[in-house]
Image: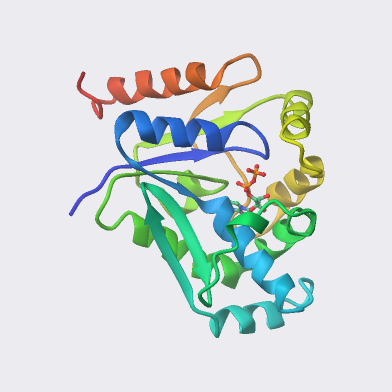
Length: 215
Ligand code: CDP
């Protein structure tokens, strides 16, 4: 079965999540938040008392954990060893360690397999850092959402989170395994002065141009 995949990448607090969720709703696709998967794994590592700097121990733990990825009303969910850590994904300690955990190549391999599983039999909008460049490089529907560092910091503060987004961006962009890059064929949208509706409108315009949406 050939399914359609809309890939949305971009740095922290660029508005990807709100845009991806709303886009998925409007075009009737399922929505997958790949960042939540890295966050869930990070929470699991911390919860088990494993040192996030010890990549061998992190990988060992993950290889013996059961990871279940699912959809609940069109929205991705992940549980590890039967626990869904949804409420903890934005905890300070998760914010602090997630970039380190997600730079471990084997961690990425394990989660990328799960991500590809979502697209096997359904159309999806997936957001993250490397969705267009590594996870689904063959999809023709790629977007990169950016915003100025000031706007992104303001947005994160307005959400009430303490989050060192500049530090995360540095690690995410400079790591060896699947760094945050703009895929060659992605449409870059600067959301600094746009509403969520505005960004979704631009994406839908592009999808129509590419013949994905008829009406
Ligand atoms: O806070 P924000 O929504 O911008 O980030 P997120 O999408 O929840 O992702 C959290 C972290 O997971 C990122 O800072 C990356 O380190 C990692 N991540 C990744 O490496 N690859 C992805 N496809 C998605 C997230």
